[in-house]
Length: 332
Image 1 (cartoon, rainbow, N blue to C red):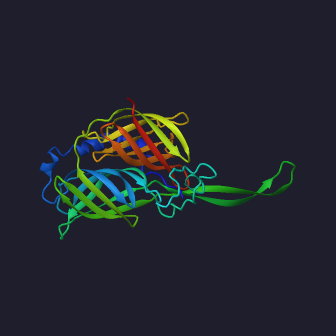
Image 2 (image 1 turned 90 degrees about the vertical axis):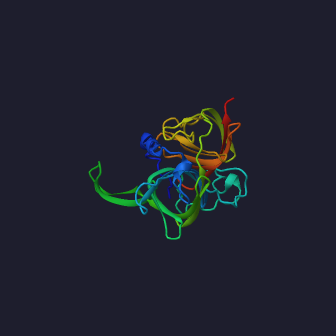
Image 3 (image 1 turned 60 degrees about the horizontal axis):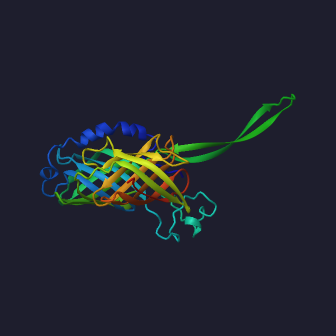
């Protein structure tokens, strides 16, 4: 099974939507505390994702419309969770003979393709929410996954006139990749303390997921030149990249464009994004090839004072998920 980011193939188009997303996020002109009523989620939230998946998100709830048709939007970067019973401290890209059977040549890798893994970035502008009869926040939104592709092999026999004048049959084996688009619905219930906290619990692919939010504030701009170290399968490579505030951002220095690369590869063609949280977290999603077929998605800690980070996640071409480490710091 082939799993990709929801927006890999359309990442360029997604970037062109940045201005529209930014305009929508700016549409609430009042301060966050003034917009939120008692028990209401209305406002913009800095969100951590946990449970069966991990990552960061920005969620904004609006109060326009009737009580049963209010809307919210979410921009999220998702990272699959690494199996907890790996026997090695190193991360594996599954690129060598030893690492194909385990993390860094340790115990065999458990199958992580038995269920659909959604990772990368996703932007949803039409989520729905309401307050139910029990006073809980209820809501749902749809995630659009990229196509899941499965190769199918056929044997074709045809009648042939050979150059020597004889006739006969030839048999050829043809492999066709069958791709099917998949969508996923996320439903949740939860509570909000205006100006303090948001807690939403639900399910994605029938597995539990939690969104924990605090109000968005304007952070220090972390734009600049950075060096990074990618560790996979016992091999390290150095990267050089730039962060700059993205057009997707809405004045709070949360979302950044990422462009750069290493000696053997570059991510300047499509680039990627970084999402910063004031709780000392950062998430990256980067397209590592011009076609967007290989995606990196990592999440981890970020030192807001010294501007360095330590993240873990995956790189995905085809086949099983390839777990990596991605660390770095701003250039002094």
